[in-house]
Length: 72
Length: 137
Image (cartoon, rainbow over all chains, first blue to last red; front, side, top):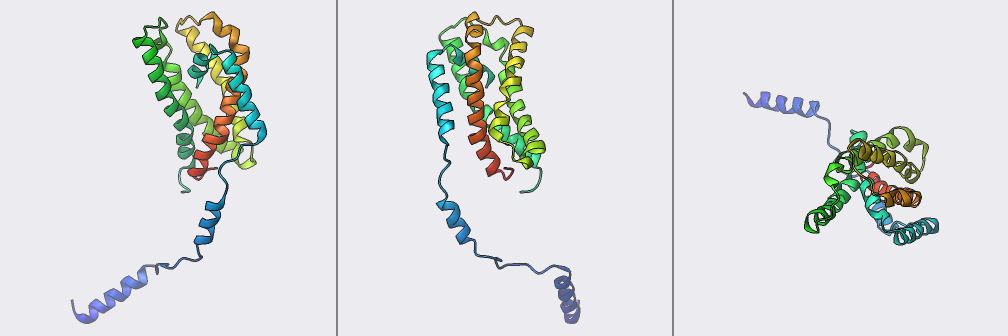
């Protein structure tokens, strides 16, 4: 293959492949900072109340624990 | 991450009961064979081992398919699952001739609400977290 053919082949290959977008389109660091600053999962008070009620009933009737685990 | 959302929903759904089942089974095995508790759990163990994790996975798939876009509460939807599992578990015990202790019937009116609450909280926070991590929330 001659030098000219090689150059032509390179040119054809470059034309056939889309140019790679090596640069980021936007700065990702602010989004990362925002994600880091987000508070951990917060439970509203009614979920705490439900959890407490379930815990109290389970403590009052511990025989239900095997039945609950069976259905988990 | 946009491929196969239903497979991801299924996997997110089965994750929690699969992990819990390992712990529960370990406890049951110790109680049954180390302390010789005369309850033949192995007769009915097929229900929590096979049906429950698959039910969780399919329930999450159903949520993603029909309710996620309408912003229906995942906790409420997951909290409704015991309403299917409780009769299912009872049916399995009857079909296999497993003698359910009478105490279980007495505490059932209390156990069902507790089960609904536990499922509501687990689905809202744990399954919801997994769904978000897998990009299907």
